[in-house]
Amino acid sequence: MVNPPPGDPATDLSPPVTSVVLPLPLRECWPYLREPELVREWHGWEYDGLDAEIEEIFGGARLSEDHRTIGLGTHLFNLFEEDETTRVDVHRLPLPPDDEWARYLPDIDEGWTSFLQQLRFKLGRHRDDRRQTMSFAGAPKDPTIAPVQWLGLGQLALQEVGAPYGATVGPGDALTGTLWFVSQNQVGLTVDDWGDGLLVAGNGPAGGPPYTGSQVILTTYGLDERRREEMAGRWTAWWGRHFEQPPG
Image 1 (cartoon, rainbow, N blue to C red):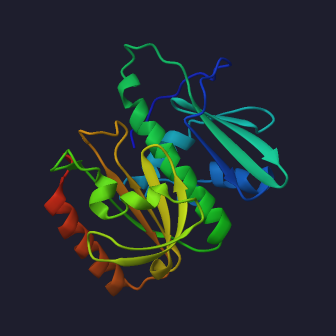
Image 2: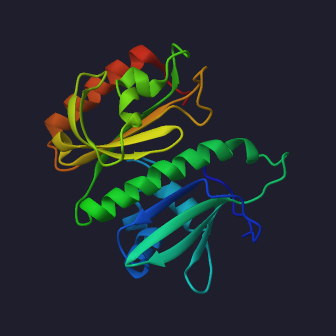
């Protein structure tokens, strides 16, 4: 995810780019939006630069006095407590068309959609557990086929959220669990065999066809090192056959 520069909160907001209901009251959700060691358990995925990314984005947050609004770079988070839950609405802040960050907004929208679903999963099912994550991204070598379809998950997005599923994905993993969420460009699935983990897969911010981007985030809990290495090798090999790796 691109690390955007600070901006000013806006009063005239566009509709939310994503909205998530967290399963705890605001006072219990708040630390997960502010404390770096807790943000690390849901934001992004594990890589060498994650701590610096969290510091850049969350360290420069703009907070309202009542702790109901957080400005994070190009986006504004509005928080609403409802019956011991907390709804988070994420809005883009207005930018002039020629602003250098305007072209990154669709990618940032998709990032917040993924990450807030990961926060909902963390708080609802693994509040006291440490996650293990890996991610793959790139453009599909065949831009006529949706990346989620390549994975073998295209039909699942047509089911009702919460429905059970069973699917064998492209890398060969036989998965079972429930449909966690569906958005315009993404699908999220719980995965029983990953220690009750989470798979988030997307077709890229532009959708398609043609499909010009994709990302998957794999979150696991409690897998030993051998299983994680086998899993990483299997997914890396499959991804390299079907997707162009992004530069850098």
